[in-house]
Length: 371
Image (cartoon, rainbow, N blue to C red; front, side):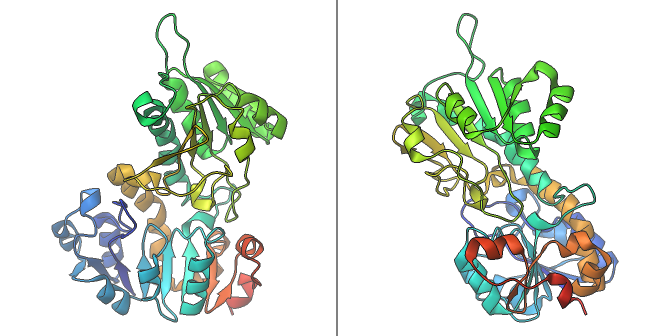
């Protein structure tokens, strides 16, 4: 198979879809790897590293898309990239279709087969290709939130860990999954007073058993959230419904109950955001003010630490990428129901229920497409 990896073009996206190590593994299995020139520069991988791995450097994205059987990326294809997709071509990347009708319709019209990293599952009910970036984003959230909390950036001017005689920042983390757990660990490590909200009692018991009094946890209800945000200096939104639009957990009206200069960090922004006032921002212009509350809603947070993120993502995606290349998408999905769960679009048909529900589009059972 010809595997193509174009350079990411989303603003301030420095990650790359394939590492030189992944390229070397693919070449060793008889595949041809096509890398757009300088695609890996932002992650610290120059063209020579890919050439040494056996890949071929291609001058333009247009040639990569025109030549490759499978396109491997990081972020969802942008509008100009979607025009280059063709019938029968395989796309393997993050998609986040539920809040993005334009992308969904373009992918359906292209006739391509699109497998989304964020909906591939594992035997434990996890999301193995989303988890590495969730870990990165979770660890970044208190870091970027503390920066936003600084007075010069519009925040309350509160230090996360306080100082002797002055209390620490109060941080609320909504969601106790991968993002929330890592966010709580880092925020607590910075000295903040942290409370994690979650609706799963088994998850709350796990957090209590593993982390003890490192941070607090509480069952999540609308009432509990409304009460806690009144005293919060920072709220980190870390909720996820796989493949679906994120629920709105804080309304605009509730912002008036918060402290002026408090910070909302929305890690769920890729899925539409979990605050009513959230809108996607970029690393170049990451924050904005609504009713005196600062919002940090960068849609590709892990891109800020591109080398760490690229290597972590590559480690997770490589086995699936090699399976798709060696077997073709149908056989690979027949052999692995967890990979089949990643199938979102095929030949003009939508195959992921949560996306269909969010966008009011008819959905085809993906198992019917395998024969």
